[in-house]
Image (tube, rainbow, N blue to C red):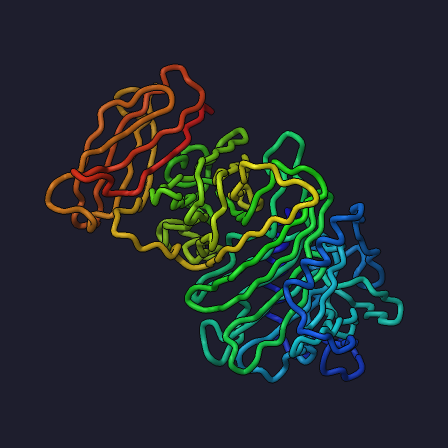
Length: 520
């Protein structure tokens, strides 16, 4: 069982808990809410500065990995058994709220690192004690019942939030935090796809990746007037500790107003800020290498960027047989994210996965991030069950122990990134072997026709190696597209970055299209 498939399926199953009723519940004492232990009234309301102080203290000490021994009915679970454990809706600490609901997630299977959860009510912290009575156990998966007395304090594996996202009478989940520092969000009329992470360390490097953990969460109870949920989180890892604040507002765009303070334990020159993780198996640029009935399979089809010079870039994703890392140098980036632009069912023909409903994710820095690169990592895969696409901001300067590093950004989950500049966007990219020359490759790029006047723009096509053959423009008014086609001749090369832009008299009229070609 692949982790990605497991997490998605487990999340979907747990998300259905509210419709299952008490049929799967074991006999248990009636306890309407999680058992919480009130802390002493603080001198001031609990907030980000408190978590930052914890993170700074952790970073001053040696890293101590935490793991839990999973025992009783939470031990040695297979995929179906874990799906059979569901949070009881009558244990929701916000039971009765019309605006938000909270589910605590059980340990088990791949989720064995304990996560501390506290509730914050009017600034007062109330730690939540792990209690197996909070969960329902499917008798089909647990025919011998559940021995509640032998289950220790294993901690939670995360949580999810619900709100009336699509209908006023249904509490849909809109975010889930579970596993390492991963979290997912959805907007109205979208399904889970691309994920975010608290931090990426060493992604795509020969030394291997380090996965930080969210070891504790403080979830603030919203007031009746709040349309957001405030969450604080403590991150810890061998190389760094960090404090996070998420102010999450669900809706047509689900927005995470994010604040981060990092405290390195060691020199760090391989850190990824605001990382996003997605899946790309194949699409119209590399369809011939996969024997599948569907025309495309991906959660995201491109990396969209708005750099500090206000240049708009679209790096189309591709499947490769070897690991590929692309770094786009910038200073004070204005935005970047993994987008899913193909929004029609016909683009995928998958009635179960519904890839056309996967959201895009967009990072918008709220302060100056200095010099660095927007980095894209593409990992080879043979199926759709593993996330293999990662993007993040990598600072040029080394992050050093003893210092504090702050980052503020908005993370949006929505069908399209919130960038509506009057410039022609790339609608689709296609590629295949050239008809007249088997040694070359034809690229076809469709732009949004509505952004062009009566005069044709001038295409500018470049390649880092090899050469560009005949190119031409064609208007497709019925499809609303301006089509650019050209041939790429590798000339014996093994790798090339190719770019194209449509220019007018005063500069670019379109995004700059970028693709990486590799010899298979």
